[in-house]
Amino acid sequence: MKPSGISADVLFEDHRESLRWQWVAGLGASERRFDDLAVRAARSGADLVGYLNYIHPYRVQVIGEREVAYLAKSTVEDFARRIARIVTLEPPVLIVADGQVAPDALVSMCERSHIPMFATHESAAFVIDVLRAYLSKHFAERQSMHGVFMDILGLGVMITGESGLGKSELGLELISRGHGLVADDAVDLYRINQTTIEGRCPELLQNLLEVRGIGLLDIKAIFGETAVRRRMRLKMIVHLVRKETMERDYDRMPHEPLYQQVLGIPVRKVVIQVVAGRNIAVLVEAAVRNTILQLRGVDTYQEFTQRHRRAMDAGGH
Image: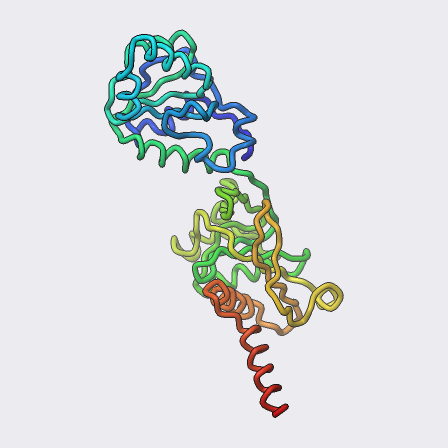
């Protein structure tokens, strides 16, 4: 995951309402942050937050009812040792959940070691779920991609291609056919887990589409609220090319799906040749419908190949 500064103070304020927690210790450590090496090594938010565990350092340690019982049901020496071991984990934040009251020794330890401690009546499991989703998005690998990102038939589709081929005009036609715009020109992509990329529109460009000769169009104002989307998961790339590029670099009828690596994840790709007179919007819709069938396990090319093989076998007999 990508290191990106987030302090205890920001974490607390971003979830003050949803988790209804209080800051009970370590107020002087409001700028305490996640360890950069731990963030780089993390594969998802699950690696950065969890129940109290002495094996996993540098993550948010959540102390629920069972963890408090584990700390309390011990001898005086074991109790002191278990509390002291928490310091060696170097957690960015400690969270006491399930409406539990933190032991005085734990509160004192947080004050001495400058470790922020939050307390909430929400369940420990709920706190972990909320923070894992939040941290996965915050620390997600990201990149910006040039193109038009659309919601077409419920599928997140990125339209890319050579300059001057009419990507924005194609986006406008698709919007007029009832599909939704996520972003035009610059699309922010985030890898939110091992298999999923989410595309969003930069705040500066929200709801806007640029068309040559007309200028900037406010799609939400022109077509209404249902014509725009805040975010979509990237499932498909439609790449527009000129005739000479198509003939030089691509097969007319690919025998297996094409893929393009985006943030280390393979994304299905369809290449469409742009020629005067072709209805590109209809072709894009057809490509999306075909991709949906492939995702459901229906492969038209393979079915044709099998049908052709059976016909050849029957002819041979």
